[in-house]
Amino acid sequence: MEKKVNGIVIRAVSYGESDKILTIYTLEEGLVSARIKGVKKAGAKLKACSEPFCFAEFVLASSLNRNVVTGASIYDGFYGLREDVVKFYAGSVVLGFLRVFGLEEADKNLFDFAVNAIKNLTYSDVNPYEETVSFILSGLKAAGYEINAEGCCRCGDEIENMAFFDMKSGAFVCGDCAEEGDMRVSLSTYKILKEASGSEKTAEFSEEKNKGLIKALKFLSYYIEAKVSEGIKALKELTEL
Ligand SMILES: [Zn+2]
Image (tube, rainbow, N blue to C red; front, side, top):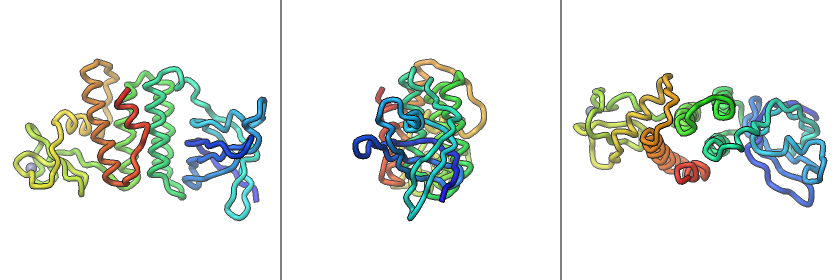
């Protein structure tokens, strides 16, 4: 049986002498794995669609739950990402997120968030750290692990001085309501996550701002590991560049 899916390659692993196994995050079926033949040979027709970030309509021949890529029309390879190391790692965080949180079922929201984030990183003048924070927050929400940064989750007041975090409910807590077991988080991380949940982005690039964003990304990395045990390697790398 042959089928067409729209997807982005999130991982490509060598298989045998000349093939690869692709993990593709698709609009129609979520995570799909497919073998692509002969792509390690020079001049192979499908070579360009066997690399991470390739966004294409893939033609898959499938039998007994095994897929083979037999054709592809590329929408975008996002090659520009490779010219900026921070943007490249930020894009890799998006792919890593899909691998960790993607399911084998359609999730149009998560798919759109991911493609838009990669487009923004490649073509817009966004701060890559900020774009990553904002993608992760949207992605976590789509995946059912939403972080609530709208004031204190217990008394409802705005958090002004000390911020804490209740890992279990994924929500911030003010200093007055904090209980044993809540985690102390820097106020700047709370504020960054609160702002990033809103729509306004500043496209500011100061070193000071990036420091805060990197701290917030470290917090998100910690949160993801606590929730799903498997972390996102590129996220750690992005915070250590
Ligand atoms: Zn409170």
